[in-house]
Amino acid sequence: MYTFDPDRLAKLEALRADGVNPYPTGEHPTLSAMHAQRLAQGRDDLAELGQDFVFAGRLMFKNDMGKAGFARVLDRTGLLQVYVKKDTVGETAFAAWKKLDLGDIVTVKGGLMRTRTGELSLAATSIQLSAKCIRSMPDKFHGMDDPELKQRQRYVDLFVNEETRRNFVRRSGIIRYIRDFFEERNFLEVETPMMQPIPGGATARPFVTHHNALDMELFLRVAPELFLKRLVVGGLERVFEINRNFRNEGIDSTHNPEFTMLEFYWAYARWTDLVDLTEELFAGLVNDVCGKQLITYQGREIDFAAPFRRARYDELVAGALGLPVAQAYDIDRLRFAFVSRHPNADIPALPKTIGRFWEHVFDIDVEKTLVNPTFVTHFPVEISPLARRNDQDAEIADRFELFIAGREIANGFNELNDPVDQAERFEAQARAHLSGDHEAMHFDGDYIDALSYGMPPTAGEGIGIDRLVMLLTDSPSIRDVILFPTLRKRA
Figure 1 (cartoon, rainbow, N blue to C red):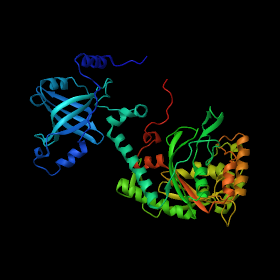
Figure 2 (figure 1 turned 90 degrees about the vertical axis):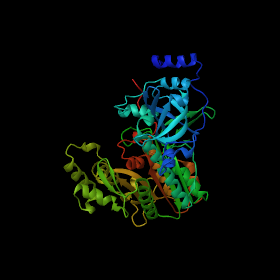
Figure 3 (figure 1 turned 90 degrees about the horizontal axis):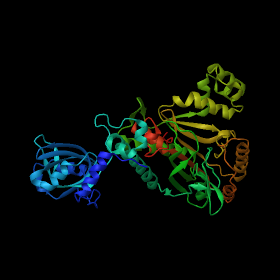
Figure 4 (figure 1 turned 60 degrees about the vertical axis):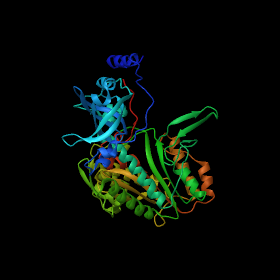
């Protein structure tokens, strides 16, 4: 059985015994803390603004001084000081004010004034309890510093920590900017299924569920890619979706099982067009959100001034191992160079193919070095199952990824629109899945049907919204920028 704070619960019952409803119907506020500051700016006579403002929020500080008192009340825009005087609000209301606790939601009516020290305040003509708080507030000196507690009790974190509120307001602004950016360029925002009969669009382990009425297995989507490309086949030539994806994988500072992605597809465009568009998006977004191009993330400076660096995958891998680029295509030389650099490597477990070995080296030795925005290009086809082959080199995919602060932020490529080639790649993925690779994709026959009708040359891209918000709020963990992250059950 749930246990309430006995002292606060007793106060709740005392209010009811006195005929006070601790959870009355609300009154719509006509004033916010931010609005008050704007109204008062540059004014000497605040009385001319009137005495009939309605302000509501959470009581965060209270100071009783005999027949008067001050409080600081927090609404969605910030803190506003409230001045309560017994002669003004009346004896009954003032007695009720004296019994208010920190955390209570209150509604205050009155007019704006300045104290002798010049602080803007709302001089109350009436004050009313709007919702009783029956949990003790966090220690006012130490706040709420435990990262796990902040994530478990985000509802408290939001009203205790201004930085948390600011970060999630910034997150909303980032998503709004992205939506406006694509709509201004004639992309159509769409919605695609979150429950899918066949998981696809990325190599990842899905969550599995069951639909009782249809008696069928369904999967939470790992990516919307294959459905978005079906829309391109249907003639919607520029589409985007800001979506929730689900991957049944590990949790760390950059991974949460439920996360937000932007995916967009652009018919008749090439991957190089996406690189230019992404550079324009990021440079503009950072300037809009941060007001400058040079930001600091976890103590490291990151320069978002265009143009961003471009670097080939093979050159980065070769450079990390101290090899000439030509030797990076020799699996024996790759293995020797890698083991020389990592003498404790598990040699039998090392990848057996060039593409997988490059990926292994990249993950361990290259990715962490890419601090400033870097477009990594010319990926191996072997690790790019949905990307189009390069016309000059069939082993290379027309693909890029954007790395910032040592993390992948975006992934884009020319889409594979050859149904025969795509079917062969699906078959290879399906064989890998049957062999125990739980992240390999299934064979999606309906998607092959769609491609068989003809998909125009198309380029598409996915951008991790959560990791982008981490960058622009200087947050060390993805759990700091997701309102309710996935957490282990309490013991």
